[in-house]
Image 1 (cartoon, rainbow, N blue to C red):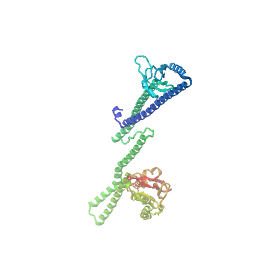
Image 2 (image 1 turned 60 degrees about the vertical axis):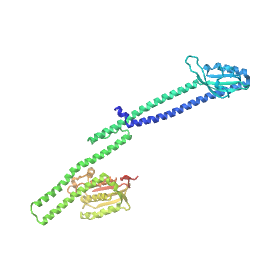
Image 3 (image 1 turned 90 degrees about the horizontal axis):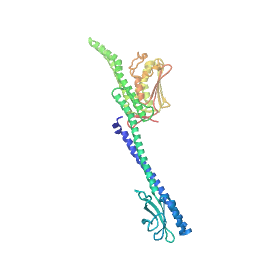
Length: 470
């Protein structure tokens, strides 16, 4: 991966923001640790000095000045490097015992805590160290100073400071390294999607987004894009076949229409012949228009554009109206159309398309099952919502051909003698998808049973489309 691409990417910038936030957080935590550690060390030093000065004052009250001088001399001699600081003086600051040559100037005055400089090393280049002490006035005016050289405390603070700085540097470097690795990984995944997208834009419609199998956000995005591409590919394949299908199914009626009109015009005919020819031509044109209208309805249903026009419908009333229109047609074919509808079923949908879908199902039942038995139309409440069922006693459709029967311009060989364009069940399937319904072709033993299972309720989204309520 090109370095410039990496360091100018949005993921790397996000990683840098993370590093800054993380660094500030680490500084805050480590600073708090330093402050707490230094405070504990200082408090321990002060507590040690308080304890020792109280002990010496008590020793003076019990044993007198001579014994106190002896104790101070012993303690001064036992502390290597002047870590313990002692000085006992007369009221006029003349030294009696201790390891200091003279009373510090800053300590003259009221007793209390003082900080002053002392020299703990004699080697060349040595620097004075800070000592912390507490002064105390004994009975008789004698002055006592007890303290500690804070070199160890300073060294501890320096050690803690150096440790915290090193820890901060390591943490920052590791955070930057993690940000770079994270950015490279994200860019690798995004580049894979971009490469696939560019290949698709170049015409490779079979290309799909790579999926690693980790089921993370990128895999979910890739899966959604792949399903979208599959859907687009399916629609494009359908569009590519529409031209051939239209030519195949409309060539014959258009050719017949042209031939009939040309033959009629070749020789003078009487008025009755002209009338018959025109009537036949009108019938052919109606069939052609019906085919184009069916194609238009299927396209509208599959586009989903009509979802914005959904309205609440009384399903029972809608089905009853369609059944009323087809009952005479069923009687003409030698069958009886029985209707069984539960009342009070309301759905949200497109009334025109639902009516057309139900009409197509009844029309198919009359065409292929008319005269062979009753045709049943029912609407009832199912487990998931309203169920519309149309069944007949005709030849039915073999199970292996039921999926193909729902495609555009598909007419099974057994159905070829009957009039039609092969768009009836394709329109029903498109309307089912528009309404998020399930369409199934089942065996009626004998005959075909078509069931349209609508969702329990469909609600409009704010953007215009519907969604199924939970």
